Length: 211
Image 1 (tube, one colour):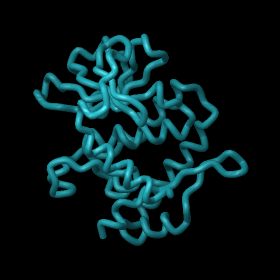
Image 2 (cartoon, one colour):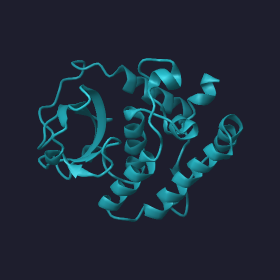
Image 3 (spheres, rainbow, N blue to C red):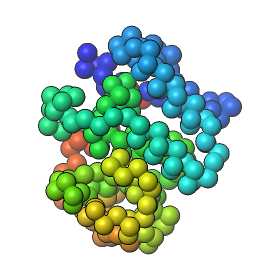
Image 4 (cartoon, rainbow, N blue to C red):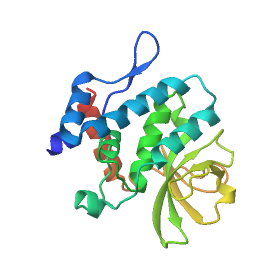
């Protein structure tokens, strides 16, 4: 069962520059999770195809809105684990997830839509109202700009300077880690200074499904 759960559907460009999904993966999703799960994944593929030539703001808004529809639940309730990072297939198939799952799904979808890694980051923050750690996706137009925040708590995309309810801690993506601040990327953190075991495990899952 866990092997099936870690399937990450492979959205890839084909001759007509459209996104597709491996039929075997889609069949597995339908068998394990049902017709509705399969349809949610197909909805994402259709959306990616519809917006692939749109502007960056349109892509940000579309991905933020699409994934924020998924209901929130905790890892303990979903996975019986304290901290589990799900792939997009898991997230959409189960139609449940926590803050990291929303961010992961948005991050990889926006990367596939052509937004460079240097512009989008998974960002740890402190949610002041809830007095707990939280994760959001941040988009930087350039390294000195005020980032836009894509969040499942507040679904409206806002500049970080207008999110007084969040205290930035650090940013990371597939390339680098930075100490976060409201303007600019901040100071780069040397590798090994922050433990990102869950990110490493997620990347390994993706690589296994996309050799």
